Length: 470
Image (cartoon, rainbow, N blue to C red):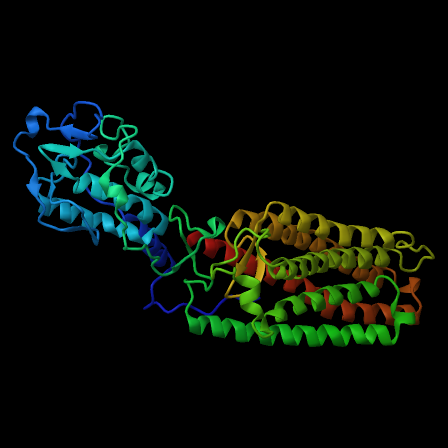
């Protein structure tokens, strides 16, 4: 298909949108990485930590904020002993506000709230501070990998046994936190791990491509509908003419044009399937409203995979038939004026090569689960997410087809001109007229097929480059 319409310079560029998504991660990180005072003692039956000598100026203080991250605290006194980046309750409250950016990573937010409150606003009684448990700390490591990757955990939140001893239940663990996490656009909430955006557990990319506006989606869909309709009409007309005179048309190399058009006819059906009622969302979206990425998966419908097989298999078969066509014309021209039939016994190999290679490529793509949905094109195809697979399974085969097909095309035309110019007496008037007719037909069909494959290669290359930049 042709490239999407030009982008409006006044709107955010794809790179900027990507930075916005990355900002969801950076905004989730609190500041401060200093280490606190050396904490002494083990976890006695009271599960509390006595004040070390340097903390003598930090006795228990009456709570100035009765709630932590929106949840009421069941005690009246606290201390900043466990949070060395905060000298007062006001500073501790400010740090909690910074950490609250993690609410945009829902699964992390669910487990880190008790830890933050146990460190920044711990229970303090009789000059002793309750220590958070090792279990409470370790519970945040896997869901909150975003913290480790973006900035790293501050020293006082690393799960060392002196600060987070084993088997020390904390009163904060009994608090029911009512501040649920949320996903910020273009992310949406999902419980499917396969849909999660990198390092943001609980959120996945929305189904509609955020790099394109609603208007651009509509414009592209109109173009696809128009172009696919024209293609399916033209190919159907060509197929009908072959079928109407099949006895005379079923001869090589002319019949190869029938198979080329049949492939593009079937492929056009795959492109037009999205325009059935509700079909586009069924094809490119998962049930949770996120993009289909890495298909096939066991818990989703097969609509995405079916459309991919129809479009990709038909595309690869069609371009390989183009090579067979140029080769058949080339060998037929070399045998002009003789009784030799160069294609006799070879046509079965044409079918074997043309149908088996796309089959192997299709199975390989499904085996590595690299089929992705795209709301702009409305289909599922290989390499929308991982452009390297697009290069290996689309660009490389089409590029090879253009080179080999172009070679046979040029050699065939040169052979025709050579026979007509250098051996005029070799051909009868009827044969010469047939050569002229063939050259005219070739002049219309083969350059069109070659340029169509070239346009396809250019489009796929443009999409890959755009994906890499975005």
